[in-house]
Image 1 (cartoon, rainbow, N blue to C red):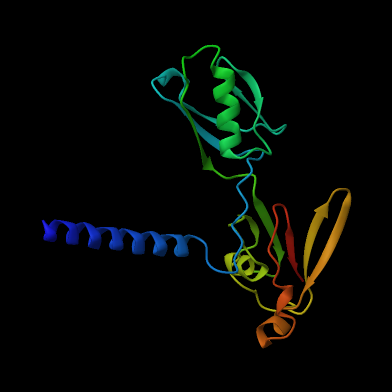
Image 2 (cartoon, rainbow, N blue to C red):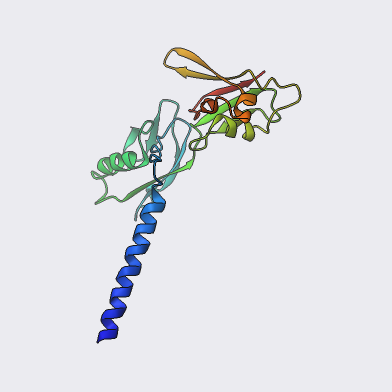
Length: 194
C-alpha cells in the first residue's frame, strides 16, 4: 500500500517537472511569441472536411485574396489566420453539412516573399522565413559577388503609397558597430546590393 502511494507521488512529481520544462521551453524569457501567419494571395491551402472527401482539396488564394470553394462559393482568405478561415468556413458549411470539422493547412507559402538584386551570387525572389533578418537574406542569396559594395546596401520597403529606403552597412555590422541595422524583413522587401 505504501509503495503504491510512493509510486503515485513520484509520478506526480515527474509530471510536474516535465510540465514546467515544456512550459519554459515553449516561451523563452524575454522573447515575444511569433506573430500568427496571415494567409495571403498565391498561398496554396489544403482544406479537409472530415467525412466529406468530395470537399477535401487544395486551393490557391486568388490575387484578390479570396478562394473559391464548393457549396460556399467565394470566401475571403487573405488577412486571416488559418484558425480564422477554418471557423468562417465551418460556419458557412453548417447549412450543408452536419457539424462540419474543417482543417486548413498552408501547404505552400507563396505570399511571403522577399527580393534580392545586385551583386550577389544568387539574387532573386526567396520565401520569407519567420523572423528573417537582412543578414540571413544575404546568406540565402548566396553571399556577395565580386566587387559588391557592402557598405551601401539598401532595403526598399513599401508602406502604403510610400517607398522607404533603409541603409545596411555589412562591414559596420560585422565589426560590431550599428548592430541594430540587422532588421527583421517584411513581405515584399527588396534588398539591393550595388
